[in-house]
Length: 231
Image 1: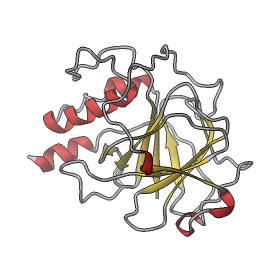
Image 2: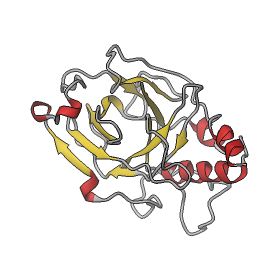
Image 3: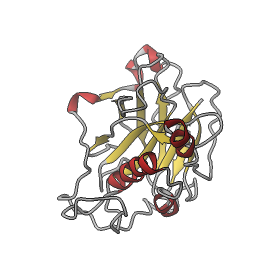
Image 4: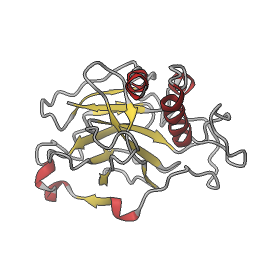
């Protein structure tokens, strides 16, 4: 039964793409969502900011550190990260860089956003995306409360989701912790207005528990995410 459910999970496929010219396997080959890959405005999130609404999983301070391009750890030495050189763009956060540690099993990434993100927390889920396509959440979320412009952040992610601890992380799902704008069909806390972070967690858990292939369709249709694949 678990093998059947896992096969259903892999059907969470994200459409649209943008490509990197860097062949290093620590750099994403694609960054996808259903919106345009070229930003037309600061972002396309229209929800009202409300600081009393937070995600159900919070990050620890020690999991996120700031770096400088001149003193990158050796595991990020091939990432081609420079403040004036941004490899990707997306309507959610604008121009940015992202790279995965070259150290096997380290589950660390670095992220850099040209104009920063100050309206909401920016959150990162570790994901697994097999060669057949699709994406599945495999661990807890980590969020940066305020992303400063051109600043390099190192984020330690964990592959700690029950049933997926032996899975290799080869991607991340990026969302803003902004209000989702509607109650998700799977969220049971009626006192919490769901955020995109909660909506993604909810649909992934529901999908795993039930095998309902449509569980994440509404989240996908909204298009307020970036799905990154490292290869």
